[in-house]
Length: 247
Image (cartoon, rainbow, N blue to C red; front, side, top):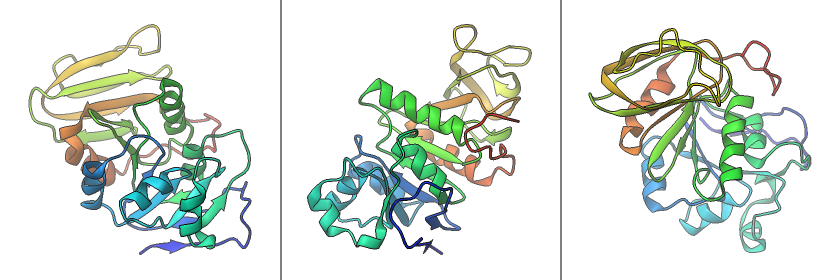
């Protein structure tokens, strides 16, 4: 069950788990997030955490966050006044985004991110950077058209035939595949060189990757397939605190 670990101070720069749960957790950012997104999240998660201004989104839908984490420059005065003070966690350093601050201070078997895609491109790219920096976290982003996550070392996806699946490298990475119309075996993926946009499935997919550098992008209607695959995989990248050693 959910347990908030309170540190006795509000300015947190260390790798302290503010929220620990043995169930999937929903993390809400300040971007676009509607009732349909939250309804989908509620089917799989009962714990909601806000990244800074995401607290306003949750309160607008009558959901109180278990914690609000970030530099707290986006949450409104009204939302702040409605939050119990011990749930507001200021992480003042400016070397990471609010999304990264949350990944650093949450322990959960899977994090579902809402309100982190769409909008400004630099914000979205920073979120993708966060997925790589905290590659040990199972984290899936839900957008208006797609779901996005960092591929673990190995995973199986029970996807219907002819499902669009894009494999987008954020660095040098190789791998093998089963169940793809265009197999990835023998390809050297890297930004500006080789990418895997709009592949198709021929049935259940199995992926093996050499590095924590590959984003998997699926249609939104594959949410349940992707969620279950991430939640059940036992193959995870090692934690490295932002330094890509061994990832």
